[in-house]
Length: 419
Image 1: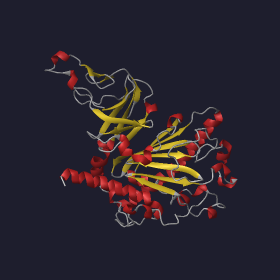
Image 2: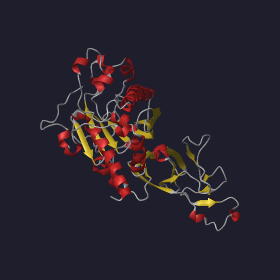
Image 3: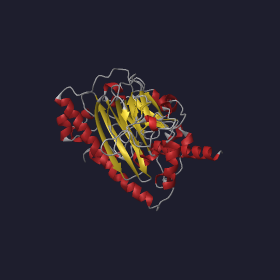
Image 4: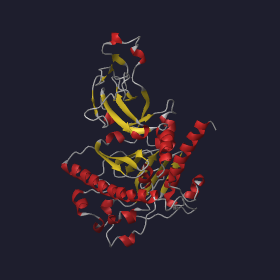
């Protein structure tokens, strides 16, 4: 793996002087009061990714999304005209959850021509309009036009479906900013072979997200990536490119493609399947001009991690696949992690085996991170160390992320207080 020094003109952090270099407080990860504040300030006001257009492939396709941190359930549907819409998943009659199967708290998906409440049979079309009321004549001056489903702001960018719970949010493109929207035109729609994983983890969502914002931990926590003979050659790793844009962040990594490494770097299964943690070795032809993926122009570019505030990451690999991470808070000390891996459709059994190997490797390394960070939560919760955690230069994105969270919470509280 190639090692890259800091820029000759100084540290990475010096390129972003507003981020600062002081110690960091992790009170935002252990305080129940802060959890309540960020629920209102961030998760009820920011654009949140809830799926992809492939989740609603045809008119009538729908899925539900439970967002516990915002105490809401959403219904996302493609209507008969092809538009993707979102609504609160609540019947207007007596407040029953509208779409669910066996267990109301579990998410569901399917296809239908109308949404019918299980309780009293009120019916809504795919645009949210109330179309049928059981024994309508018994109601007093009821105008069905006044009782459609409550809409939620919903926009699509690059096939990713975003919602915003605020009443009048800024346009999604403005929120995403130029760094993220440079990816417009990347062939996400060609990578439809998908593997999804969900895990409930006993640590704050920001602690787990922090683990994917720096690579300082890789040679230590994931040391099996190198054999004993190789470890002296890889004492550390520094990513060669970072960037910040509003509350969003990105980091790009480099290194020789895994298939070119000496055999003693590899697990036997990787050689057998021609795949591994960095994806299948047989790269698909996605075209020569892939917009936005390597803004730093890294010669040996390997992967770019775009971190879209507040809780979404898109990790795009040079080998022609990508991963999507989302972190959904469930309390001040727990969250639900969602990981999805996207590949081109497998054409052969070998293609499928290569993808399965990459998936298994992903799960192994994600579990290593998860196990470590439960311990981090416990250590922070002890408050033996309070708010003087030093961060290195390559933990720039960690610092920026926590600053952004604090800024959104502070701005909301000032707005609420009329300051």
